Image (cartoon, rainbow, N blue to C red; front, side, top):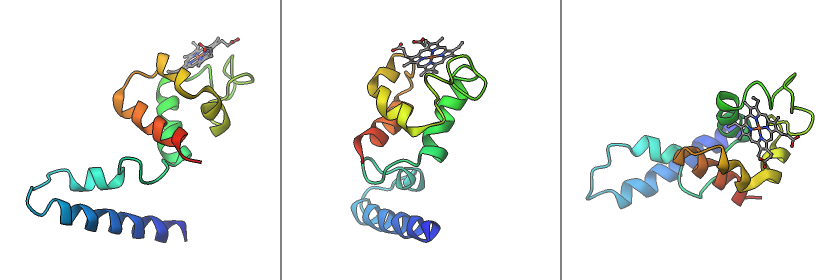
Length: 105
Ligand code: HEC
């Protein structure tokens, strides 16, 4: 069901873009359609967690020294810390994903 919904959303996203981009050729249509700005909430496990896994291991993950206090494999920690995380996550794309995640209920 989730997969179906995703495909449907992607489809709608691309159609919308295709109309808007009819006059301008967009080389990155697929890439932008996969992460439309502010349209769908980024998936924690697929999009948010990997950011932290790639940068904040091992301390904030299982068996790390601050895992008990600030476990980054739990969405609540990210929601709680919010933009405080940006003192350590500087990449613009990653910040945008996290912002989108925080902005949506
Ligand atoms: C080498 C281990 C280590 C790594 C790697 C690490 N942290 Fe931490 N982090 C800590 C420790 C230790 C604390 C202090 C916890 C406390 O308050 O007792 C902490 C606290 C924090 C805090 C709360 C305190 C504050 O500064 O407001 C945030 C937010 C945080 N880390 C984010 C991150 C992020 C984001 C990353 C990855 C980009 C990261 N940390 C990677 C060890 C680490």
